[in-house]
Length: 422
Ligand code: AMP
Ligand code: GLY
Image 1 (cartoon, rainbow, N blue to C red):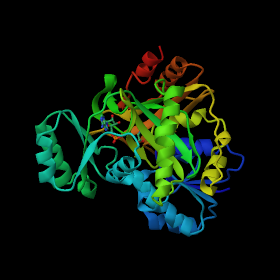
Image 2: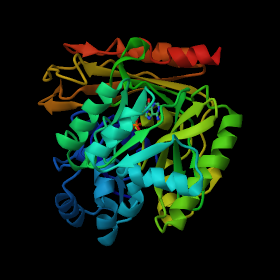
Image 3: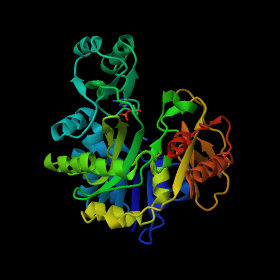
């Protein structure tokens, strides 16, 4: 089967490398892809949000199956468009992708169906938000309703910070229309767990759990980023917690979406916080997480393409999805200064990957035979191991073999998980 993958980051690189292990997989195109993905797929410079160009490409190439990976094309209706052209897709339709596209929608869904989440208030005008925030306890959390490149959730520690955040979101519109509605949410505490799942709208099969490291600096200091590294599995996600989440969160969410006439098919991502009062949903994503995918897929033992086809066709069963009992760690190498100002365009040298090691490229372009840095997050160095310590050590050894000027990585990816496991 010839496969079209939409997207161009480290997550897409991991998806493509995993799809290519399938005996069913033929040619792979990636729109737009990147200079690293070009080693594994034919990359075509079409933006993931340019739906009409994607449709043109799909019509003029023998595409048998499409995998739409990023949030924005999903929320814009890329799957509806391609399915309308007769191309089967992995990914939710627009009406289901709203579970990530609108935090107000997902909050109301959780309230209506009794799915545990942080208490919150919704506002569509800045004056009432500010007057409510005067009487709030701090810290509290302010979230833009729509997509905001992962930067739409702000933890504020005082009324002054809250007022400033409301102004930026609702008046200056730093996230555009995404900030025209906001949620003010109760601040929760506890370890965070990412659980990606496959669902065809009937069956939901969680993948191995993982832990993201969102802050830019060691010790969870600095600004929030798209993710500086991950480990899997997440030691906090014990079998007891998993059973509770299945009963109170995963199944109820899939059923709630069906009841709303918004059947979700694809990868449904549960961002959870294990609070003293039990697991609660922090966010839903309508897609694979980045960089969670980079540690989850290397542990998948079964055929990703078969699973994706079953999700599309409504024939998913739990026994199709098998994970190894091993561990994985991804260390992200970023350009120094990310997530703020940084320089790019530096030549990258990559080490050879041994058994259980992978480099998934996120932000790089090819110039002749040279790979040049081209983004904030440049690549992920991923290794698996029989223990978490082995995986972490191997991922850092691999990361230390990558060279480009101004490369930066956190040195403590996995440290919290290792402490928890002890
Ligand atoms: P989100 O964009 O909703 O995933 O939020 C980004 C990050 O903000 C999460 O990974 C949490 O670390 C933090 N966060 C979001 N909501 C809350 C909350 N209600 N309480 C505490 N932290 C939160
Ligand atoms: N790593 C978090 C996300 O993909 O949204």
